[in-house]
Length: 278
Image (tube, rainbow, N blue to C red; front, side, top):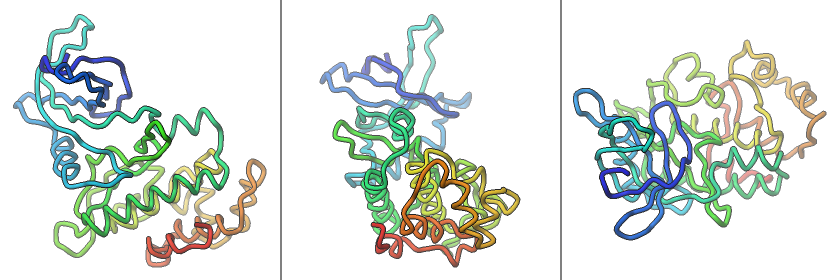
């Protein structure tokens, strides 16, 4: 139980800072996803929870997870351990789980299936970037959830931040996210644009949907695969992957434009949405 309000039904997942359970609202019987985080020794709610809730309550988009509430209470996970105080975030329950698990179970997607999900990712990013003015900063297959109709929603907004940055110049200096999805400038700990970071991660996701493997281990010129993109040796790059999957020239062109070494040479969101592959 959580705060005598929510009955734990099953595990949905766990990360470095939280675990996620499927819970039932005792009063209504509604099933929800609940992200649970420990309260620290000073009784403070984790900053990532506050950030996620503050931004989540501002967002209303069909391809972004709907946050239903935030609270704190005593947590009894029925494993014989004493109760602890936790912070929790209530969200709609996405019954098909993570896009990552669907990909692992089904194998690589056709380009048409990848396009179906990718368009929804772009719609969510366009709303976040242009309407709300925030960037996600931890976009990855694990943070894309699917409902019962296989419509996707971006989740885990704990690293989301204003795309203007602290000084209003659009440059960010905190390096949040997951390494294999990060831009070269993030990995080098240089200032970066949050919107570009989201688009770069979206390109990695698109690649993984079609090829069922990463495009590179990390976007550094020392990486044997990324150095081919960075050095504009794209024909040689694609030759490495054609053994496992044949991709259309339009898809290759789209991915190359999104994964360039020079951030000023990368495709913008508007250019991506207007690309012939879409």
